[in-house]
Image 1 (spheres, helix red, strand yellow):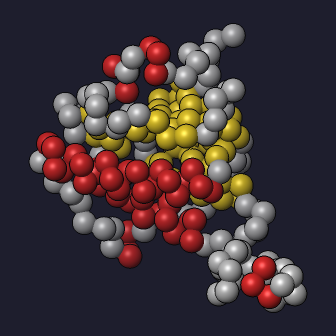
Image 2: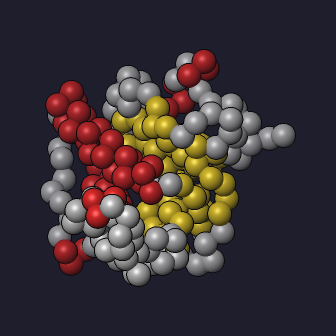
Length: 196
């Protein structure tokens, strides 16, 4: 079976977003460009970890290669728009790969379909100049679908900002145990199972 690579180099828009109510949300990465829209589903923890690792990647690119770090986006330029509809899941993400391409000064994000491997963010993102130069042994199965996006540092910073806001927009945490509060409360372990 052949795999499909959805490449956006660069996309018109690349965002993290959700569908559903807090507590029952499905998280997506969505890329738009060239008349196409591709949405891939992933876990909340993957979105949070992706934002964290992209921040680290930008800082490391600045230290190693002198890449100018963009300022945090102004409130006026935040992308608060919903995901483009219809949100049709192409695949569920299993592995996220990151790299910095020194030649073009761009960040490459690759979301790879879940196979038998576990969910992870892989590799040393600055070890190679491009995702395609990785060793074959380190690559997930070649028959898995992929979403590949190439972003400028400014677009990466905007993605990080929105991803963090999307993750934080969920249910508020319990002040005692830190677990998410449902609209009807929750069984707090700090209260020996009584509703809070």
